[in-house]
Amino acid sequence: MIPKPKRIFARDFEWRALSDFVERRTSRPQMGVVSGRRRQGKTLLVASMARETGGFYFGASEATERESLNLFADALSRHLGAPPIHFATWDDAIRHLFAISAERRELMVIDEFPYLSRASPALPSIIQREIDRAVFDELPVSLLLCGSAMSVMGRLLAGNAPLRGRASMELSVRPFDYRLAARYWGITDPRLAVQLHAVTGGTPAYLPLVNNDRPKGLGDFDDWVRRTALRSTTPLFREARYVLEEETETRDSMYKSVLAAVATGNSTRGGIANYVGRKAADIGHHLNVLEDSSLLRREPDVFRPSRSVYRVCEPLIHFYEVVMRPQWGLLESGLATNAWENAKASFSDQVLGPHFEEMCRQFHLLELEVLGKSPGEIGAGVVVDPVRHEQIQIDVAVFAPAMRGERKRVLSLGEVKWGKVMGPRHVARLRRARDLLDAKGFDVRDAKLVCYSGAGFDPALAQESDVLAIGLKELYG
Image (cartoon, rainbow, N blue to C red; front, side, top):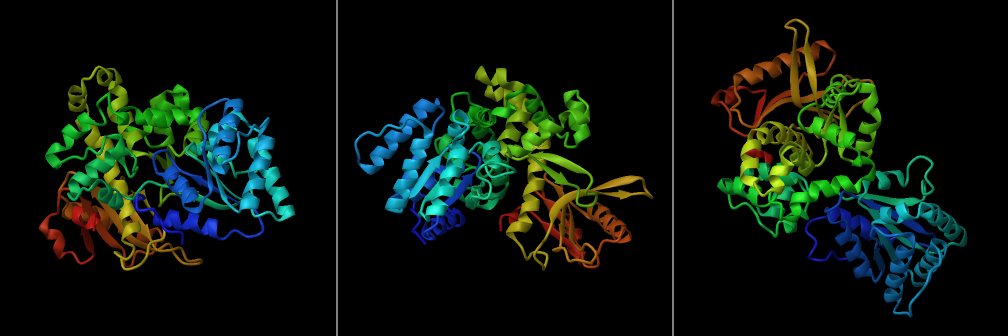
């Protein structure tokens, strides 16, 4: 494997994938696609790989077709150490790029490709044509296309897109998981780590955006929020808006209202429609676009797959919709202290609580053997109690890998409480849900009942052999 530069924190999987891509060059062309939300470190990864291997890197910017061609030509001439190059069209530019890659056997990287394809819609077709020619001529071309606009990158290889079937690698650069994020920020207090993660998520570049300002302890968290995320002079203050603006299709006000609806707890299609004042059938397109842009994700109810809920993907956007957007005028006036006091209750109920639930679901991807068996499906759902006319919310349901012809096997049923001590009452509800699922045909013979809490547990839980108590210490390993 090509040695990873020390300046890159973690990202071992991603670096190995890029290294394998570069090192497996043959007499046939290869194209890779690298995508991910902005600030995840894609540019650092691909630019470093180009630098380490002597390849060519071009980072596009929002510009006209003519200016983009000129910038591309300038970058290529500097890479070659050649006199200035001029390209009349992208046809000329891509042909020239492929010829150089084949001749010098070098990696060629085009970063922020959506900027180029937006100004020059024919560019994917041009690349597709040149790849097909390179296949016929057996040219060892190696090209990486990268971008942050998720809707554009998602369509690049989909359906009848010109480049469909041409990629030999698709790499998605995702945020750090919550444990890795705590290490990156240097946070050792699990309670503080949860609160910080509910604001910044696992996006690494948010740390330099706040000038490496870390909360000094639990008592500093409120002030840290006021002096970073809510201070109008910091880059992080407008970051959520920039993320939303990057997806051009979501600039319409309806998309913003749909996001606000989900962020504030209206997670079903009917609830979202009611919040925005439309019929459920009228918001289908908006939900699809937000999903394609990786701003929302749809999660089926694990017990009733025909029903689903929507969740905001990016913690900072969730924080923005609940805390910042309703008070934007106040924040722009520099009144961060007032705004935070107004929003602290909403942050706890609508941001921190749901975020802690999601972290508890992710826990089972980090601790695969905690239930004695690696999990298959992990999700949430509602168990209907027809006798008591109740609905039992299961925040974390873990299933064994599906086996054809066998009943769906439940490994655990869990309830999550961020600010409440959990005890026998919560276990009784989970036990009732387990009995109901048994009657419905699920395999629950060895299903554990799990209480997840950020506030602690009643000592009585220790007497229950089928109950697990997972707190902040266990969550962070």
